[in-house]
Amino acid sequence: MVKKILKWAALVIAVVLIGGAGFLGMQVRAFNKSTTRVYDVALPNVSLSTDSAVLQRGKHLAESLGECMACHGPNLGGGAVEDFGPLGNLRFPNVTTGKEGRLTDYSDAELARLIKHGIKRDGRSVRFMTAQNTAWWPDEDVAALISWIRTVPPVDGVPGEVNFKMMAKVLDRFDAISVDVARRIDHVNPPKAPAPTADAKYGAYVAIGCRGCHGENLSGGPIPGAPATLAVPLNLTMHETGLKGFTYDDFMTVLRDGVRKNGKALDPFMPVQVVRAMNETETRALFAYLQSLPPRPFGER
Image 1 (cartoon, one colour):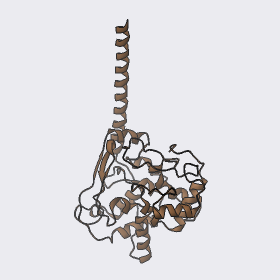
Image 2: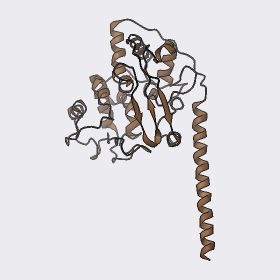
Image 3: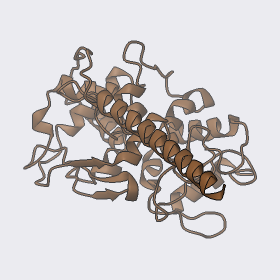
Image 4: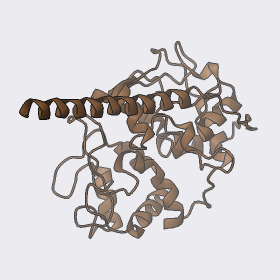
């Protein structure tokens, strides 16, 4: 009798394992199919400028909301490797006109489509670039960023490299992480932000860039599938495990000094330089939006 029970138990376990493997295989195939899809999105019209105010705006966007320098480095030469453990790894590409730089491969219109739609020059989705965070930008901001990038001195570097493993592909399909970018963007009716004002309405768009790490609910917690060595994003809601009792000045002091109220330094994984580079309208709008969110316990992401 015991042998019979063990036999059936082994059979059930085998079926579950086979079924689980089949399910995972389906998710990986769906990911691969999606990332090889060619999008029929027309190249936008873009007019570059040499006006100093426009170039300054482009530089500001690269340093702040665009997160260009946080990923590609202060000279945009790339080369830094991000190790995500069981999820895979990537090497940020050189986005200048130097050796191994990608800028010479793209026309202005192709760059604009990449920024707004997350679509590469071959029509396929870019992977892991934060285009979903810039899809709401007005055309003049996209033009300003491209105008400034075209002025950056060439830097010789190494090619970019993307290597995401099965776990990352499965988590992407469950929207736990964002690797397949273009499928997350509305290419027909892209989001449009209101004019920049220091209020929660505009702050909702500024906060889009926070959700990749802190979660859709912005209450933080471990990033699904991430290695134990990766920093755990904090709670950005006004819950007692988050920012309860914070004033705007408290918020900016933490970000400016890179130190929490308890004296513990923020992990280098947190791109403090991005928020530091935001102007006051953007940071006040972001804080107003965080204040407007329902308080959630840490970890509800």
